[in-house]
Length: 238
Image 1 (cartoon, rainbow, N blue to C red):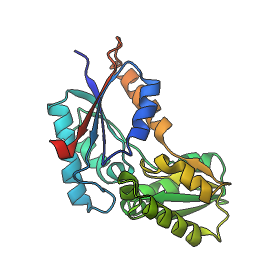
Image 2: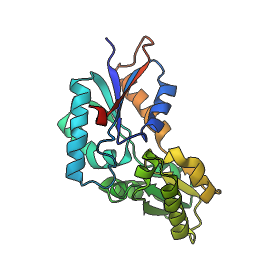
Image 3: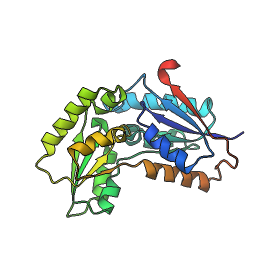
Image 4: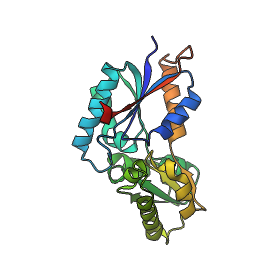
């Protein structure tokens, strides 16, 4: 029996990562866990969030026979990944972090990072900037409270208000790239592009998919037969 790839997020945002994984790994079986009961993650304390994510990970291991677990959420990755790897050393984990390295490696000079408050304030975000920023590059970190939740709930007016505020607050900056530091944000790429038509929009979904493939290859865990399937789980229904 083939083991499965577990993918978790606070809601629909992680589907942007799932789509890239399915493109790259079409023979696999997936479990997509949308934790809408605890959405949004971005404004929870680290202790509260770890308890939530730990429970989902335990479920995916014990009940769903997962061979690898993908945290398709920047906040969960930046706040929980180190603890998860320590507590579950036998499990393979792949996380999602804002594509700061991509922006820096492509020599963008004025990068705007949009993410949840928890991701912006995380130690991992500080590390990403310190490890990748070059002297001639400017990285502006901008927390977006409520944006992921508004996308989740399809609250168009609220999304517009938040984007207009971001534009106002950053209009003095010569933004040439925007890091979409939450997996919900690619779902509104078209809207963001209207406010920043000259900026390149960067997200880490493709990189996550490639890392999942690499890990499965390295551990000889790729499905050898095509048993493709996606099982969607909504925590409100459990």
